[in-house]
Amino acid sequence: MTVQTIIRMGHPTLRSAAQLFPVNRIGSPSFDVLVADMRETLHAYGGIGLAAPQIDVSYQVVVIEIENTTTRYGEIESMPFTVIINPTISVIDEQVAGYWEGCLSIPGLMGFVERPQHVRIDYLDEAGAARSIEPKGFLATVFQHELDHLHGKLYVDRMKDPTLFAFEDEYNAFHAETREPTPEE
Ligand code: NI
Image (tube, rainbow, N blue to C red; front, side, top):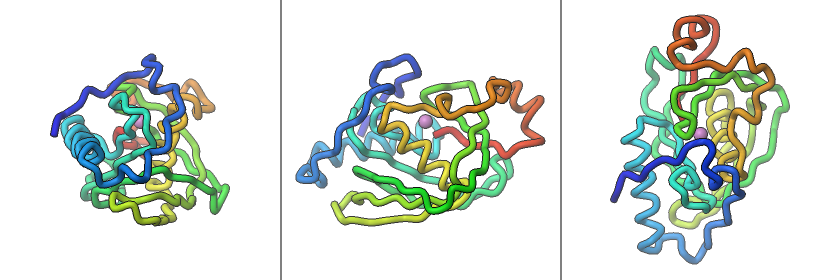
């Protein structure tokens, strides 16, 4: 298990569509190493979600782990370490809500993004079993942010108001009291 370097905006892999992960390789030694590396890297960087393209592995694999709610991040539901392979998304409710998003591939910056707040994700788990989840609210935003990474998209592409794009210090000084902040993904 190795903490991998997270590549940053400007690296072409972040702008490429990731390939489906070969189903017959789920559970293989190389798959286990990938998941372990993603977990270690997520922990080392202090994030809540990581997509394989962020460590320059262009496959459709995402990990999400949200620990207990902290006051810094407002009210966030926790989610145990979850591996999401080859996900598809559908919108259950088009109603949007906005959060300030951060991204480990865009360090030091935050931007306000509105996204649908109830979606369905169909995916394979780390045992290759078909699963689905219907996250709402903040968790729906987290899933959409991570799945975007599998399609070469970054949250900056989703921003509608460039005045709501800030360095973290300025976010904390001028915006944090009025908006829900979002941990880095
Ligand atoms: Ni991200």
